[in-house]
Length: 234
Image (cartoon, rainbow, N blue to C red; front, side):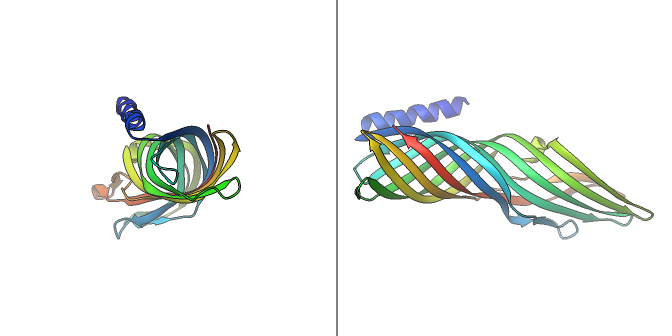
């Protein structure tokens, strides 16, 4: 949190010294999330198992350098979501786990926004950049199926704390676009889409007990989501 405050102080200093036009606002964003670039050991495969709905909300900061270019940042709470399928086979048993993740992050985006001139009351924009993501909470629901030499066991568990399974820091690329509709004075309605593509592994390796002792499974996956952004600039 201390680093977050320092970063925001630096951004405000940039606004004071360099920006010619400054706006702030708030946004809310329903999201669709999934896991990409999923890998695991050959004897314990891991695969993406579908999409899951999520949500994000937060503060928007727009530092305008000209009427058509600005640097945008903010502070978001984002629920990154997705589903994974874990499988493992041993001499004595085989198991399949389907996990549905909901991971809460503090996200600090930094993007360059390019805007058109105003057409009527509307300006179109595109943006690209990156985001620093700090995991603060992680839960998962899962279905399990374990088959032994004599019997198959099935189970379901919800709202499991899996924070220890998630790497604390990740980064992602952000690409998006949309419109800003002038309402009155400096007040603007913003509607747009962003694609957030992770490029740092979010999963920690996992130790499991087998008939031959403890085994470390090297898992890897990134989180992606598409967000529908609706917000107000002041």
